[in-house]
Image 1 (tube, rainbow, N blue to C red):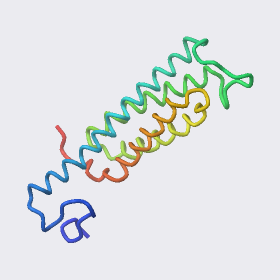
Image 2 (image 1 turned 135 degrees about the vertical axis):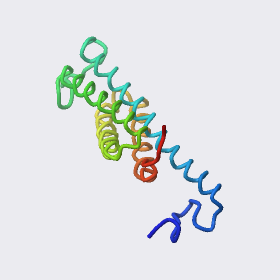
Image 3 (image 1 turned 180 degrees about the horizontal axis):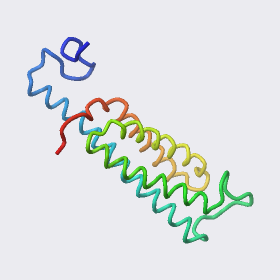
Image 4 (image 1 turned 90 degrees about the horizontal axis):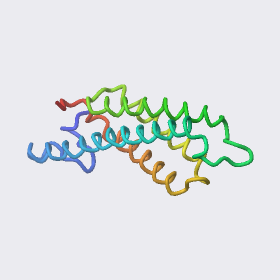
Length: 152
């Protein structure tokens, strides 16, 4: 069924003038742009976190048991790689690439789970990052079908 016969709730449908449909579509596309921008920004944060873990071993305070799963170097490399992938995926979201939607949701979910492990050390930062990851996932899942537009 098409949007013309059964419009999505909350969006402009077949009985709506074309100008209003374009505005509604533009707002939905804006969420994809938002998701791309936040994905790039979160990726850059992860790159910085990874580089700091690799080059400044005294920056992160470790408990008596160390990190949960990896050494500080392993944690740094994982954050660096995930950050680079997130930056590239966020840029791909701007182009409307379909694969970028799936990868961005997976990376945002992974990043949110990774931040859970560090909530006790950085509670405010962790909650902010998790909230942004959830918002990115929501924007892509709900409005991702609008990503097949011509941006440039």
